[in-house]
Length: 108
Image: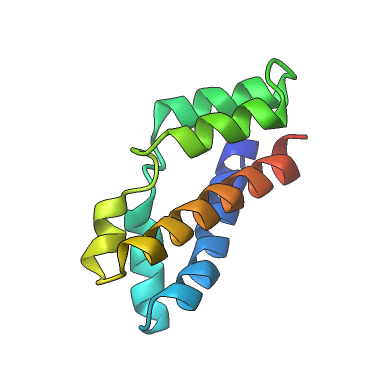
């Protein structure tokens, strides 16, 4: 299994736990939301993790790109679950941090 796939698997698993703290539901709902929430095939994400692994980008640069890429985390799914804007913003920030933490673990 590639480092990128391990990274994606880690993000998927950790996001389920995070979602359970923000949204009422059951495990099956969290698994489906975690699948739907991210654009796992995002070519930018693949390129950025490759650059991170090759020391062509710092973790701070990666973090900035993740936080600035609104298309990576599909906010429409979050808001469709009825979260208030402020809670959705907190969740989006937490998800961005989760992605960065997993990237640090798998690529640095």
